Image 1 (cartoon, rainbow, N blue to C red):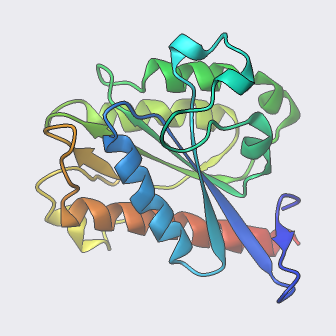
Image 2: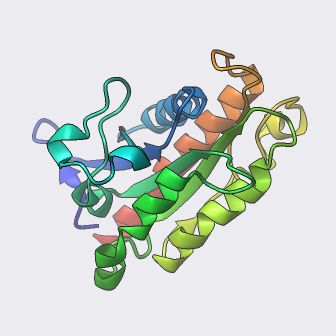
Length: 212
């Protein structure tokens, strides 16, 4: 893929995985960090953690939309340049957040150019309750990615934690049940997120090697 960079030190390909998320209480951000950890534990891959602007600041100049805490806001150039993409959002009535939806509504130029076609992607989510709409949120987050021509990946049942998690996580993607704002991820939730990140990075590297 044209977005890959050679390491000057070792003259090898480095896979860049964009981990893009929206978070308010910090729960989805903690899950994003575990996905990124899986990406970077997979081998020659780097995770780029980015967030989306809050809707209240969407009309402000870009220089005024730098978050006080957390990951920097994503740019369309970063999205276009990535080799793979992980998208995370809290559940909002069984769907992605308004801020994440607004971001994808702004990606028409990339759709027109086919910038994301054939790049692998995965999705993840968090909710405050065990039956808070995680699976429908994961499925609906896939829709704009499919319109962009991306290759959707999930979590295979070869991951033992899918059969034992008392919290989040499904074959559609990682999940986190955050009963309160500072709740820690369960061990199963962490492992499912890391597996998803590692799998995404591995697939991106394999696709990149066949495209060169």
